[in-house]
Image 1 (spheres, rainbow, N blue to C red):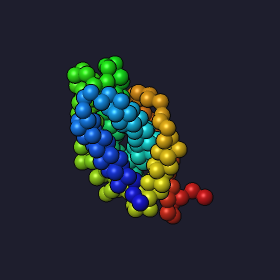
Image 2: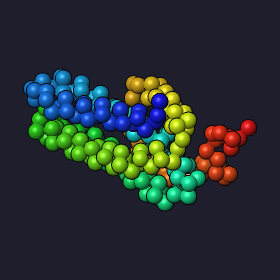
Image 3: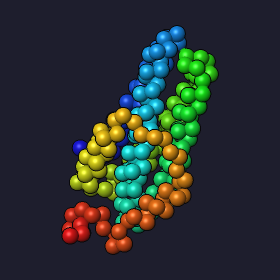
Image 4: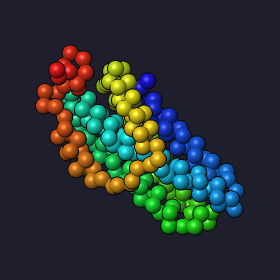
Length: 187
């Protein structure tokens, strides 16, 4: 199991749910609402799992590899993207389900999410596969799966200050540069 694959699997599910919304009859508002509610909750759960586990680990391995600047930029951008997605999801809730305005807001959320996923897949996930060993990716995958399972009923959306997030994540890193795995793992 690999956290990068779990994230890709989540991305596939998000794309699938957006595609389902595009194919449901506009008059079937009960189905549209049910699928949207599931997708909206899933988008937030996925974002918070990444913010809790993936991005701090990306910063950690990048600092250890002396490539912190790129990871900081990627993380700042990702946290900002998550905020944009949260705003887009909130905008969907301002419109009656099935209306032109609702579909336009769903399309805007899909665009914001799609842009974020493409960037993350091209940059953050690729960098993490290059910098983190399989054991570390497996450990994070287990934690990621557990986080999503424990919070299956949903989590409360909370915007984050991207710069504050990076400062806080970097402040939690061990001073010795250890990734807390292998021979450098603290006893």
